[in-house]
Length: 132
Image (tube, rainbow, N blue to C red; front, side, top):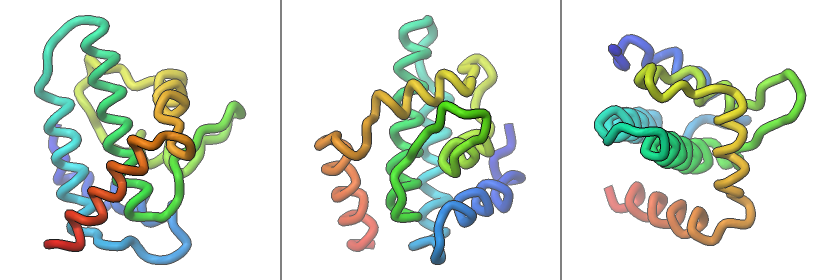
């Protein structure tokens, strides 16, 4: 999978999710590449697959929230949220089979609004970006 060929499409999906401009497109792109690389190289197995997808969606949620200022969300209707559209734009290994239901379940488990670990990781991400 050639992620670089999708760069403009992926960043356009991220740009469409925010009212203002992204904080830093270059940093967003580097973070997305790292998230895809981490999910691409991991163990096999059903439980490992679920853990890989959860970790991947968590990382995308952090990138999305940091860059757009919006929390990742899901909807139970047929229409996609901006976060779901962004997540689907990025090609990941086929064996992970990121379905709509799996993505929504991952977003529910993250519970970004009430998750203190998510808030802590987001602050750390913001601090790392500011230090660069």
